[in-house]
Image (cartoon, rainbow, N blue to C red; front, side):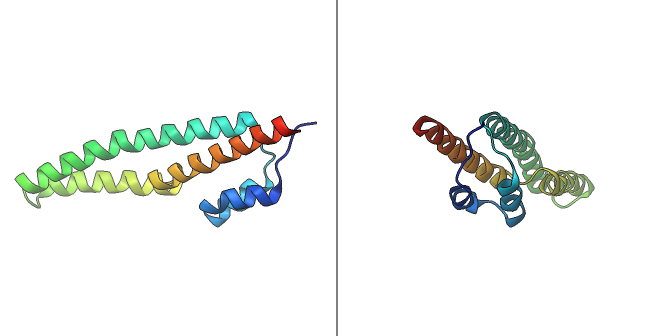
Length: 118
């Protein structure tokens, strides 16, 4: 039989997440494999946000200060806003993914500690 975590402990650790994600997490049957895969997925999302966000910010800043508010500047701004709005609603922001990684790592540590004590 797979080891489970104390639901109160899961709720305490998951307090960093939004309400919807806390309730989803409370209903899931947590495993080491699932937690590890979620940590990797969230870290990939954070890396993607950095690889897209930093170049976008640098290009937008350069254009804004050299060209001013022109069509090309507004185009780059629009592309960045479309990306970030889409990302926030589909996979979450950089900060949310950072909190997810923190929560999943804490749950994984608790899971490992729980298994070792049992």
